[in-house]
Amino acid sequence: MYLIIFICTCLIILAILSICAQQLHELQASVLSYGKLNLHNNKKPTTNWANQLSKLVVPKHYFSHFYVIGLISAIVSIVELISLSYFKKPLLLIRLLDLYDNRTGSHHLSQQQCSIGLTLITCHLIRRVYESFWIERPSKTATMHISHYLIGIGFYGAMVLGSWLEGLSNFESLHQQTPVDMMALLAISLFLYASYHQYKCHVILSSLRSKNEGYSIPRGGWFEVLVTPHYFADILIYLSLNILYRFQNYIMICGLIWTAVNLSIVSKETQTWYYTHFSTEKYNQAFPHGRRKIIPGLY
Image 1: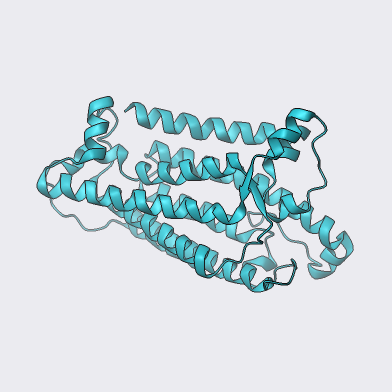
Image 2 (image 1 turned 90 degrees about the vertical axis):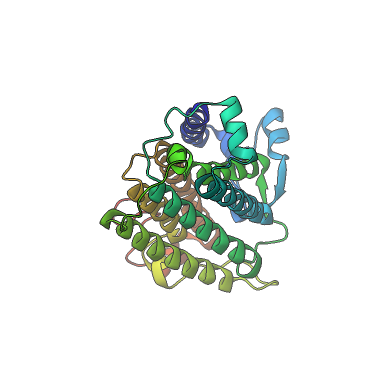
């Protein structure tokens, strides 16, 4: 399917561009930073075009749109696949895919894998919607670049599609129900483990700030060993999906690469922000044994 190729290409290009942008001062100062990193960003654009580019921002709490739109697309996908699988009746989305694309590359994942994958993605989006509206406390003045906003919406839509596109053709034929294999059980277990710890991290981050207080150093749980453990949990979530698909889902592989690259860059910026905002001495006193940025024992 051309759509599979398009999504994979976009994700890899975005990963490469993120690495390049980190090395270019003008893009680093105008595009990469968001939220608290942008509020206290000492790297200011030095050219007019970069200064104008930096003004294209939206409120950071628009992050919730990623998950709301992603959840809507997941619900639409579930309805589409139920109609195709049980009633042999393709609805609008699949009709459009058949009209403008082909089914090449949509046979190599099983119906069971795709059904479990879509279920896990949907659960992830439900949790993130809940956290966005009832747990997290984003600053009213925090912003993010509009490119982050558009990429975020596109990414979660792509992950929903990626959970079933490469097994779409297998939803049209009857299959015997087979027991869930060990790889699927491992994937589900890792997904639940990572989701639980990410939720705990978000609760800790939320507890640091009341409406009238500023930022402080997060403590407890995975924050004792990592600067951005919630990002590590995100990587584990997409790793679990790749385990489910036995690393044969090209969109999910590219999604994992993009997630790891993008969040590693942000974690480095976050550590720099902590040193700048709280002073290196205060930060080192809080963590005398040091802590990794995002991946335990590695980075």
